Length: 147
Image 1 (tube, one colour):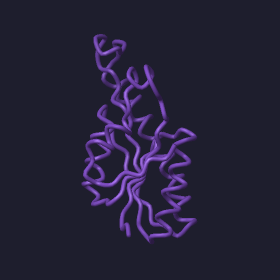
Image 2: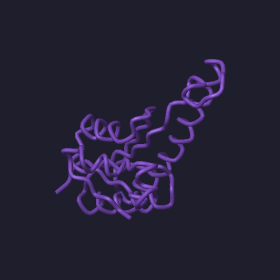
Image 3: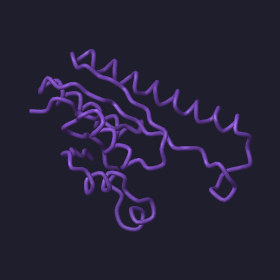
């Protein structure tokens, strides 16, 4: 059915449930997995909401975020391998989360994206946006959303 599944995580408990479901599905389908996490770029100017920091300090902070994301993905990889699922990991620095996930799925030739939805409604959804909704409406690859 599926050959390669992209599982997106943000490290939240709900996202962890999506990881578990995605790995279970991959095991049933004998599919490989790409575990993905997008980390934001640090605001580079006061106008973007950032403090005035040196380029070296900004790089150090972004490197810490990437390192933390990779540690989370290493945990996903270990869970997958315990189930007999081959898992590769991918950390990407971007402020365009949904677009980055869609591009990553295409780049890795995935045939399914698995991700969580935090189920925000009303004004919270309007103010915070919905990366999951954006992936759902713009992806040409099937998307499995868990809540």
